[in-house]
Image (cartoon, rainbow, N blue to C red; front, top):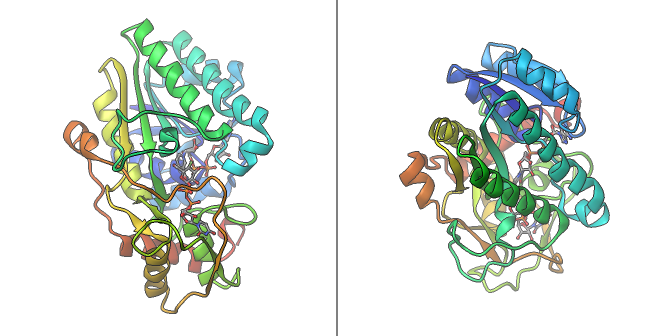
Length: 337
Ligand code: NAD
Ligand code: UFG
C-alpha cells in the first residue's frame, strides 16, 4: 500500500517507516520538522535500503494534503504528527489544540475529499487520566488531566463520530503506553530537544555524560520500591503494532481502539539498574520531590491487541536498554552529531 506517514521524521514515525518498507509498503513522509531533523530521512534510507518519499510540510496545509493524497495515490494514513510535551501543553494550550486537534481535522477532511478512508492514529495511555484500577483495559473510563491529554481524547471522540457517520471509514486509535528504546542498528532513536522530560532519554543522557545525575521524582509511592511504575514498550514492538493495526483495519469499518503495551510494570529504580547494566556502569541519582501530576503506577492490559491483532510485545527491558544505549553512545548528541 501507499501509506502517508504524518510525523514520519519523528521518533516513532521514523522507526515505523522502516518497518513499513520492510513489509513491502511504500511510505510517504509528511513532516514539518518542528521536532525532527531532515537527516533522519537519510538514516531511514541507509537502514531500510530504500529512500522514503519525503514532503516537508504541515498537516494543517489543506491544499498540500489535497495534492499529496491524489499525487501519491495514498491508500492509508498513519498519523503520528503532533506535539507531545505535557508541561508545554499546559503553558501553550492553543498550539496543542491547533496542531493536534485542528491538524487532525484538516487531515481527515482532506482524506474524505480524496476518498482515503483508513487511518491509524497515535493516541496515548494518557487518555485514561488518573486510572482507579490496573491493568488498564480499553473500556476503562477516559479523562484528561492536561491539554495534551485532552487533545488526544478530543481526536478519539472525533474519530468515533466519524466512524458512526459513514461505514466507509476504518479508524484505529492506538493507545501507546511508554515508548522507549531505539532501532537496533543504533542509527535511529529518540533525540529530545533540550532537557528530556521522560525517564529513559534522561537516563541515557546521564549514561553518556551529558547530565550529571537522574532526579528520581519521589520514592514514597505505594509501589514495591516506592518509585513510579510504568509500562515501557520497545519502539520496535510499537512499530510492529502499527503494521498489525494497518492489516487489521484496512477495509474493516468502524473505530478500533487498542492498547499497545507489554502488560508489565517497571519502576524507576528497576529501569535505572537495567540501564546501568546495559551501559556497564552504575548511574548516579538523587531522590527529589514528586513531579506534580504523576500517577504512582500505570500499565496496560494488552489482551485485546493480542486477540484481535495477533500482536504482542516481545522485546524485554534488557533489549530496550541495550538498544537505547547503542543509539545514545553512537550518537551522543543525537542527530546533530
Ligand atoms: P516526535 O515529536 O518525535 O514526532 C512527531 C513528529 O511530528 C515530529 O517529527 C514533528 O516534527 C512532526 N510534527 C509535529 N507537528 C506537525 C505538523 N503540524 N505537521 C507536520 N508534522 C508535524 O514524537 P513521537 O514520540 O514520535 O510521537 C509520535 C506520536 O505519538 C505523537 O502524536 C505523540 O503524541 C504520540 N505518543 C507519543 C508517546 C511518547 O512517549 N513518545 C506516547 C504516547 C503517544
Ligand atoms: N521520572 C523520574 N525522573 C525523570 C523523569 C521521569 O523519576 O527525570 C519518573 C516519573 O516520575 C515516572 C516515570 O519516571 O514515574 C516515567 O516518567 P515519564 O515522564 O517517562 O513518563 P510518564 O508516564 O510520566 O508520561 C508519559 C508521556 C506522557 C503521556 C504518559 C501517558 O511523557 O506524554 O506517558 O501515556 F501522557
